Length: 364
Image 1 (cartoon, helix red, strand yellow):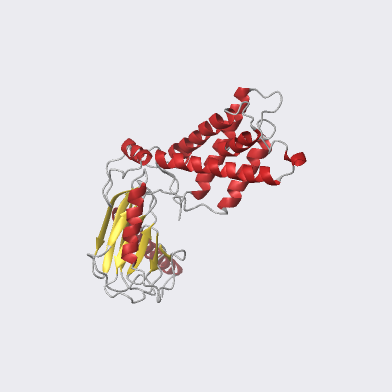
Image 2 (cartoon, rainbow, N blue to C red):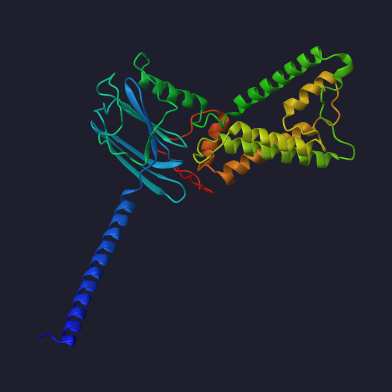
């Protein structure tokens, strides 16, 4: 018969063997996890994308900002996408097994500063794709672009030609970011249009307002005791905060932005007027100050309402574009934007850029 000591020793041996097996399993699991992380690091993280279906083509937009080394390979039943983005050179790689076959020769892609748009030409035109991938499993990096999604059964528009028109339009503008950047020539006519519009509005107000209520048409003037230097500085500050606000809430590169852009800009204008009304009347826009001055023929210290906003607007653009949310661009690309010509870079592959300052990549 076994003694009590023998049973205790047997129990101790069993526990030791069980502990050794558990430690071995944990070590193996840890090695597999490290190996998986290494493979993920080498292959790259999937880039976030959104897609929509049209009659002859499927559009896929990869939301990668300031991408470099963009590679897109179209195959009959799949396509591969890879790039490097950000100052940290984050690698992205996506391999998509498609729902149906595509025409590799008829498929194209177009790179912008905030994304890479791919147009996949369907091998069988007119056939609807209920999903992008062959597998029904939901991919965390892929979503439907409901903004551009529509029922196209009765639409005769050729999508690939639309894609070509889209590319041609951006080339003609001289830069992909047509919403935020424009040539000096085009900017001049924008300013002229604003001034003419302000004059038209002021003239209508002048004509419909009775003489005893007309006053000076809310002409911006310096308040008593405010010097020219203080007034100019105030206009610089007010315009700079407004310009930065407009850039921040309308920049489509900022995928993490939330809320109403119009409401944010409205609060910025309100804050500017609540502060500036006690100093300069809060001009912030030369056209707004110019029109009443013309109608009542009063140009005393009027230059303050041009110099201040122009300096403030320029400073706001520089602060946002180089510090708060910079673009990785060289001098040649920025000069091309000002001239309104095509930046010197090839389609889908980027020339060597200048040293980036910083890039805050937004979580998608």
